[in-house]
Picture 1 (cartoon, rainbow, N blue to C red):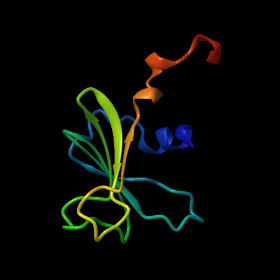
Picture 2: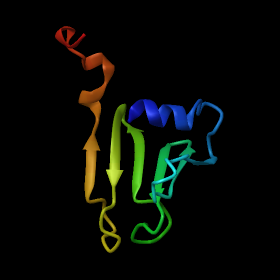
Picture 3: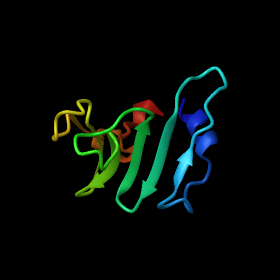
Picture 4: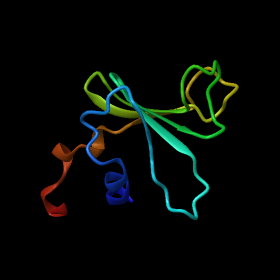
Length: 99
């Protein structure tokens, strides 16, 4: 899946502030958009949103040096339902026995 997404998104170094469409397989009914902004990546699935409608329900960011994913799974709740700390997924944490 990661390789598929890399192939679909390609080099994103020059896409800051632009909305990117992802070319899903033809049999997929997904309509997902991703937008790279200065603070992170916004992800929105068609028909989803957040409490005040000004931001998407999924946001990937670096916060105080920690990569994290923020999810608003309830459109009626102004607070995120999930904040996932991704610091244990950093390559610098890989154990030698995983090579």
